[in-house]
Amino acid sequence: MNLYPLPVVNGVPRPKIYNWIGKSADILYWDDPNNWAEGEYPNHPEATAMFKDAIDRDVTILLRKDIQLANIWFSESTHSYTIDSEGNPENAKLTFMTGQQLANITLDDDNRATHTINAMILHSCKKLWGPGWRTVSPSAAPDPIPENVSKLRLGGKIANYKEAPRASLNIDGYIDVEISGSNEFIGPVVVNRGSLQVKSSESIPSGTSLLLYSPGKLIIDDGVVVNVKRLSINGNDLPNGTYGSDTVKTFTLVSDNQTSNTGLVQGAGKIVVSG
Image (cartoon, rainbow, N blue to C red; front, side):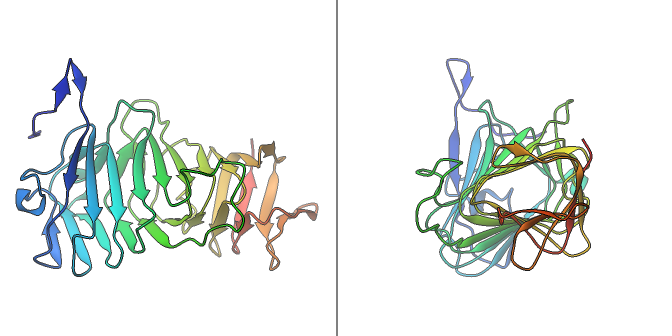
């Protein structure tokens, strides 16, 4: 693989930030050095790709090869990015590699746009950050709860690159995240704040643990069935069964008609717990 030399200090990989500046067309390429202020494109572990008010239109960025990086950061006030593969998605994917605990996709406090990543994502542990994560603990929210102003769509496959399929998905911040691909990871899936919308029954793989904390929300589209081995709400594990939501946004155990007014699960889909 053709990679730029990895910055190393005393034998330790050194993080490096790359700033996107490409805006000459509706469709541009990740591996074009002219699209990055540094004159080279991010393609090594510990790299951070920064997208900050650089475009004057909605832009699609195409991958023509596999890309390695640690983080993606969006800070766009108006326009949207779509990151996709050109040709076979298996040959042009994003692999998040870092020596830190988590690889991150961040939509910061200044971001107001919706961004889409349709390229295949490989990682070991993924965290999706949004406004509010700096000051709010996972179990408590400020009063009032901030409105979600950013959205991230993940349309491609999410899988792991290590032998153990332990890739988790964590949402921590006031953003709306949408997943629609046929994904392959054990998890867990953790929603601390913001929302996670599930568009397909394959988007949360069978056997995953699903952990929800107020004020985070899970939205399950009509016809979608999420099969998990464990469902935990605010630290309390729910027994095996089929769960859904009603019109007043209460959480219902369908089989026994028991309700818990957490309001964390919405939509017409269902969760099946079979631990």
